[in-house]
Image: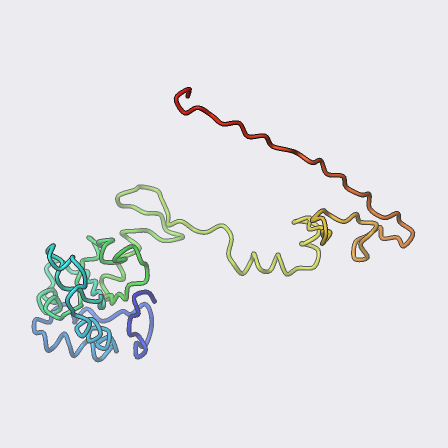
Length: 219
């Protein structure tokens, strides 16, 4: 993942926890949940990275810097876990109906470690649609973008026997001139003959460039 998140002890990705976590109010209970799912080392990493910014940025209201920790996404409006998790250094909280791109990809780097609650994870298809189900909110009648070519299909086509010569029309090139070799001169192509005449010699024209000074005031 991006940003060097500590996810060695995380059981699965995407990480989804129960809706009972939305009713916690104490910071100690929030820390216990992070420890149970193996996400607390990432929060400790963000806490230990708090330092003073080098350079002149600390004189311009950007004095301290710290790494990003996990992002908690909840689905119930007015959940009590907001006050519990927002006081843990490096941990941020967001509502699934109001996801912020600056929190999902800080600095434009994808790969933020996100912890979803069960209700928030179920709302994703109804809010943003899926590959099969069309979106009912915001943009009517649209689906999630699906890539037309999968990497496995593309590699399978390239590794097949007849495709390099039939589809891509690959021809071996002369090592000296960088020009395609005739089919009659290459043993792996059909039409090869030992009595074929050698390829014709290519003639190149010598071009001489004459540069004249230009008066900049005449432009």
